Image (cartoon, rainbow, N blue to C red; front, side, top):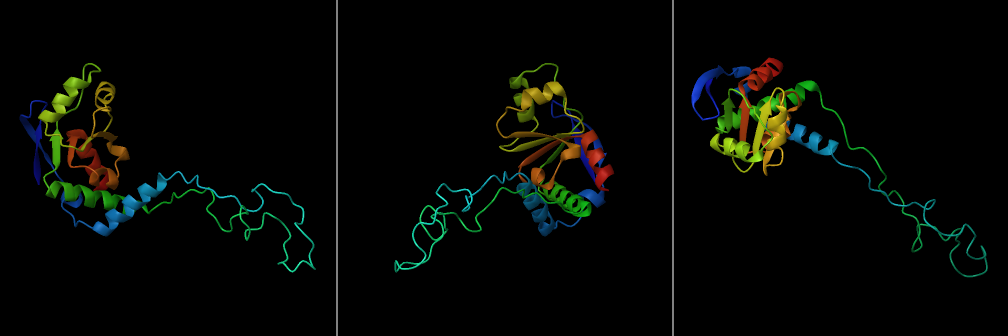
Length: 206
């Protein structure tokens, strides 16, 4: 399969061969789901916490006599049975991060890329560079290239000027090809990738 390569003026300047092993494989939604859930979990802060009976304020003195009052036996005012007492088995700070096998992550990325190619959402350009750090010309460039409400820009190494100019454009996300995940691909309506990035992805995922 071949895909046209365009320049900054949306003119066709060549083509790139797409590997069937990467861009024409089966679209496995379950594998994509696994990768997206793992990525979301890794970004959870996990700072939630409730106070147990050792952390809530209150005296350690026995509230009243053990026997003779007609009331239930209580050893502390911080008991979970009382108001303002500690919480039993409440959430504590933890990390939600976990790992998936590399084959699963790569398979999910292949499936996500195949899905976007099938939908016609992949655009390949010869290069993405900027001579100065100015947002307006880069915004016009991306619009000319077919940028949509959510656009993912992928390059092997992001040009410093281009990165500084495009990172504050609403809806535009810039990712190096080595850090690309299935969630990045699925959470966008348009992918603008350089020829070098496509070749690098095929080298790693093929």
